[in-house]
Image (tube, rainbow, N blue to C red; front, side, top):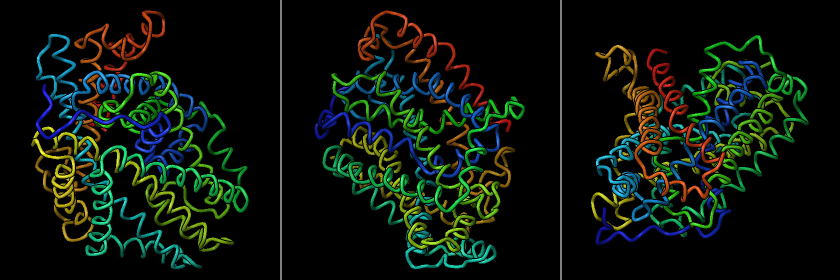
Length: 462
């Protein structure tokens, strides 16, 4: 694959720090903040964490290493499909393997079609927190507030548009002037808000109950379903097969260690998720609030607590600012491979590619926005059994999570383990032909494909 007339070879990360901040920022999303802590507490506490860590480092790390290696090896383009095709050609295989990268780009684009909607909710609630709308709010009033937001298409469209504009603008500026500058601001803000919220929750909440809930191992609650849940959480939390790590890898300097940084990113992603639990559950337990409300825990349950706590207006605003930082850093990362693919395929400038991709994302994303109001009763794929009763929003989520991502991860593991040039990839990983490399190769060739197949089957049947 050759570089187009308008497209230049990818830039380099200006430093290892910005590379790590961008990678962690992509991996840390809204799911880390509200889903992971609840899943941990309901499935055996630290017993679940141990299983999750086993999968995160046994499956997540090898796949992150593989995607970065593909990106850096095929760095003639930042496009995931172009990188995979180039690595395939280097190994004497067909350039059609590039379609594996195309599947990953399609998956992350579909993710953005509903992720921008949820990111918009965080902005709306931040404004409400600053305005004092949570003050002395009751459970009924909190549920009504959320329901009214969902029923208001114009308000949802406004926030969806704001998220799209920010995402497109930052990506249009390129790596150094756009993505790096953004993560240098957003990631310190995210960690700062997280630390403040953990301290606040420990001060005004029931820290002891939260520690017991999150960290007390209860192996009797571990079942086959729990193990599958931990596997899926590790897979999706890290952001595997979304083309982002391949694109970020194409900007990676040869001096940066891929294995070492893969461990750091996966570890940081897990740490943030656990910190989120200690920012949320002391408050939840102190007020006897329900634990099993899913996304409602953030958007319906916590406002009640913030409205009744000392300094709740300030710290409620800080909490939703934290969510905004997590959402936008993920949006920036998710959108990067879409822009790179558009730039490569249409042979246009980076800024033009961002504008074209952004317009498509905004227009198609309206389907998710209207799934909560104008099109709430519209189930476009209900003639297919697994899509029965699913709105546009639900369908995007299901196809991306249960079909495209597992398929992409399976094919990437097959490609890197069986098709790509063995010595070339080993050189990119910076590993000698010793135990560490052999363990990685066994995991990527045998363990990862089986694990991903289990996720795929479990997702479809579940």
